Image (cartoon, rainbow, N blue to C red):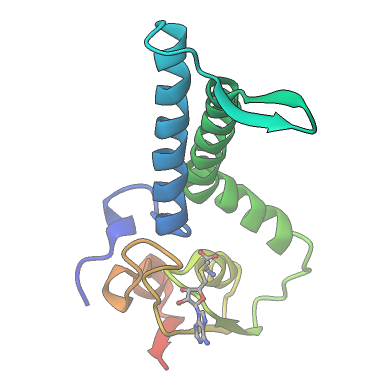
Length: 164
Ligand SMILES: C[S@@+](CC[C@H](N)C(=O)[O-])C[C@H]1O[C@@H](n2cnc3c(N)ncnc32)[C@H](O)[C@@H]1O
């Protein structure tokens, strides 16, 4: 394995669903550009859908762009925050509900870069935490065994990640 990334600073458990995050930012940018072009007066921001039941229906493309663009951008920002900080807080909250004796045998299926597995292993003294995964790239950025955050293994010799 390579040098563990967490030994160099804050553990990095990877960006969840990187393709989804990328698409949210692309859609967000397109929406905001549409709205911006109407705000700058480049075009009206409205498309005529044609008369429906005798009524001229207008599609407010600029407004839809603003709402969609803001919504998608905010969702993208939230997903980045959640991946970098939020999920570590959530992990600590979840694991704190367990009364750890320290001798547990923990199995994390779909451990990715070790978020839950490392959190559990930190609470063990004589127990063992095992993670299995097939490291799908679309689920987690840089999702591979080499990126596994395994400093606990080095520090305590009890965290193991096994290839499926
Ligand atoms: C969204 S990631 C979550 C990773 C980690 N548990 C976390 O919270 O950061 C889901 C993980 O499940 C893994 N996974 C999905 N299907 C799997 C399967 N059939 N067998 C093993 N791992 C799988 C993916 O490779 C990915 O690492």
